[in-house]
Length: 186
Image: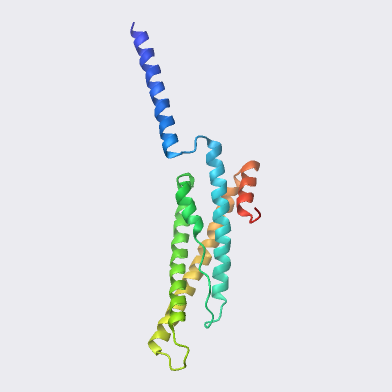
C-alpha cells in the first residue's frame, strides 16, 4: 500500500510539473530547446556585430571630420532594443554582458552628444558676430562627442574580439546562422 501511494504521488507530481512547465513556456514564450537558445545566440551575435561594425565606422568618421562638419546621422542602437525584446541577455556569458552594457552606455552618450551638437549647429546664427558663449558651448559639445567616440572606438574593438571568440565556439550550423544575420544580404 505504501509503495502504491508513493508511486501515485510521484507520478502526480511529475504530471503537475510538466503542466506547469508547459504553461510557463507557453505564456512567457521561453525557448524550449537548447537548439532554440543556440540559434537565438547566433542571431543576437550577428546583429550585435553588424551594429558594432557600423558604430566603429561612425566613430572613425567622427574623429576624422573637420570641426566645421557635423554628422547628419547618429550612431545606430537598434540591436540593444532587439536584445531586450528577445531576452537574449540571459544566455550571454557574464563578461560579454558586462562589455556590451559598457559599450552601449558609451554609444548612447555619443548619440546624445551628437544630437546636442546638431541642435547647436542648427540654432547657431551663421553671421561672424555670433555669440561667443554659444560658439564655446558648441566647441565643447564637439570635444565631448570626440572624446566619447575615442572611448567607444576602443571598447567596440575589444567587444568585437570577444564576440569573435564566442562565435568561434559555434558549430557549423550556428556559424551559418551567425553569418546570415550578420550579412546585409536578405
